[in-house]
Length: 89
Image (tube, rainbow, N blue to C red; front, side):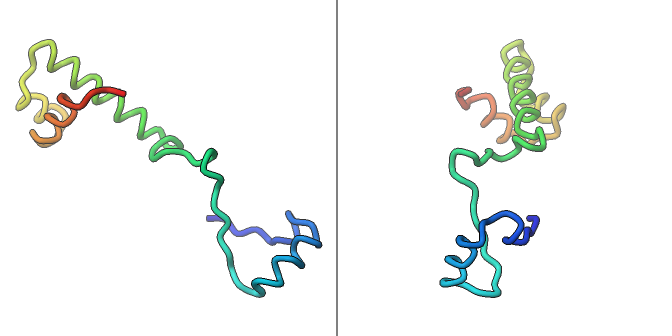
């Protein structure tokens, strides 16, 4: 999290209004809900896992066993089952 001096981004009148409630302390202003990103969207992890899971499903449909998939992808058998039996969104 990057800190920004309030004087550089807010007008003086708003700073004085905020100072009525808090002075000399840090406050956190959260993102608006519609601007929040889901886990992994910034790093690309989300799309990587979605692609991997789709590949696992396709390999299972083409005849690979759950045990082989677990070994190939270094995942537990339970993880492979969850991937295979969960409906795609």
